[in-house]
Image (tube, one colour):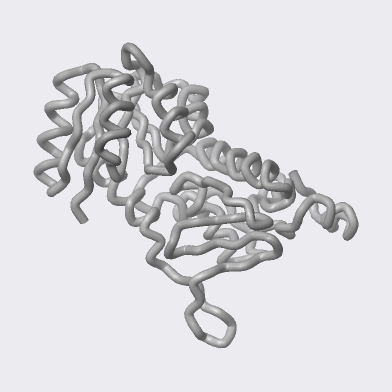
Length: 250
């Protein structure tokens, strides 16, 4: 499906290369030279996806991402010359869906855009025990709408990024199943893109923080050294009343 994609980078060569590659693949493009221009275009044009260079003048990509996340859950991919793990983790924790290090292949960027947009479309549905298709997953106080790509806890929207949503949906579709990082990577990135296992840890922390803000710190359980699974998904007051389970949770 053709997309309207905003690319913000202060390097004119990168803008030209991405403009050509994206248009060749059927997308329309909006090009910004710095963070302020990117925000202005975002507000006027409402793009379907944003590609942000981290190191831009005026406002850097991280600041632009924070401002966009105040009003939108549009998918965001970071580009950066910095390859330190802390930089990648920070980009994901403030709301980025993916992070690519320069130099990069435009073909890989386009592949990652395809993965993110397929994930965001939420076209898959869960299957109930009687075999009927259902459009909403309910686990305790957690509700997930796969087609609407929306998740709420105790009726409070969680505001998940596309990657966070994919991870939580995968856990909710198989409650009680223990996912190792490899399986969560496959669920979050459609099995087409390889990322560091620490990237999954960053997304898990983000999901937990958003669920805790909505009233539950027990949505995702960790079995140390093994993996993750869906927790009881109830408000903390209910969890304290029922008491902890036998598993090690974090």
